[in-house]
Length: 346
Image (cartoon, rainbow, N blue to C red; front, side):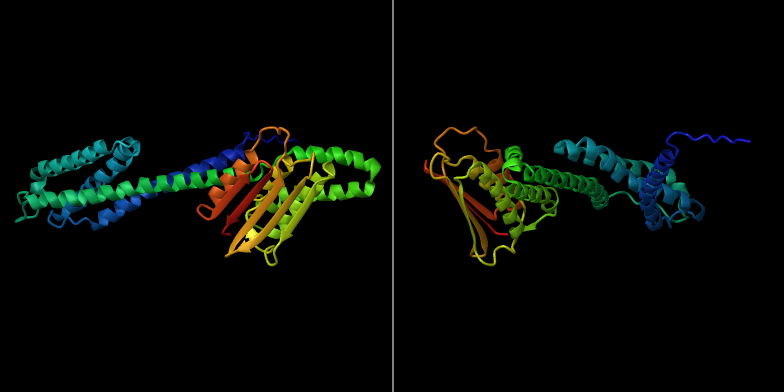
């Protein structure tokens, strides 16, 4: 005999959601019960008759919690977080004044509950001041909690936003060289298979670096230079007359830096070079007074070039985020030669 089983669509997921909801509810209840239990244990009602002490402790606990709860869930979100500071200050003073009024008004009502010989003394100025100071302390503590969580959330979102921005800026390499390389590769497959194989390996290293190695935070300068060399090799396929000279001082290649900080300047040098004359790119990396210095020199094209500059704007933005106050970028264009000098403390 066949048995049929009936499953509710999404049953396991619904169960997980219910469990998560239950945990959230329990956590929320504990967040309220624990402070109440602590205050209940601290509040002393020894002046009341023994049978009335539990009730008065409960009422005293609720009274003490009134100011921080009203402040945290009403005054702070409705006034303070909306930058209505004067209204918030007035609201706090009114709240404490009302609580003082409730205290004075209820004392005659609970006087019969006191032990024989016990009585409330008339309020003096110092008693009012003590009451206000105590309530202001509770209000200040309850204000700090939402402000702290707001600061934590804002910091988290700001960090996440900056991280996303950095990732986007880091990967905004110009894609035009990829299409040019593929076109050149198509030609080399028939004309020079050995060179075509070299192009494929160079291109694969470029893509591997961009997809994997650059996502690990800082990278070794040697890896960045290898990426730069592969890029320039592929660009030289289009520009046979392009002369590239890269000099690196000893002991520099093992230094760490964030990826793709130097590449936008190299891309810019390739794009705006003078290919109708003496086309060259001179690159030099050195260490001066403990700071890494990168220079890039190239002749300026005399023909109009499509307006761009996004890569340079991106690297300026990344430098301001990664090395605030710890870098110096200088550019010079005399009409014939364009020079970039970047110095930063890594």
